[in-house]
Length: 86
Image (cartoon, rainbow, N blue to C red; front, side, top):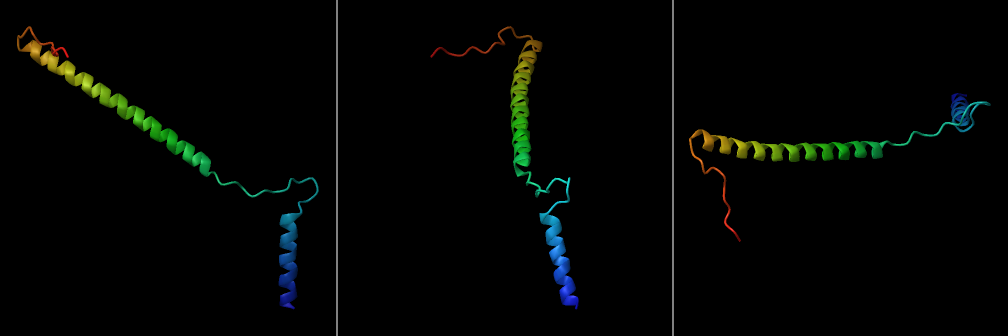
């Protein structure tokens, strides 16, 4: 008898998942959201690269300005770097 009860219970469970009640929308399995996760990760990577690029540019600019100020504060007048003609 327990065997027949388990068959009817499994049959009822399968019918419940395959046939929605009247007026109820059929349920679809949720889609994996891996594309959204990748999109967010790529956006974060791009933002991080942009921030690193701006930081690198700012560091170089501030370093050159600091060298110029150090040269001027020492009393020299020829502080501009003159590159040789090529």
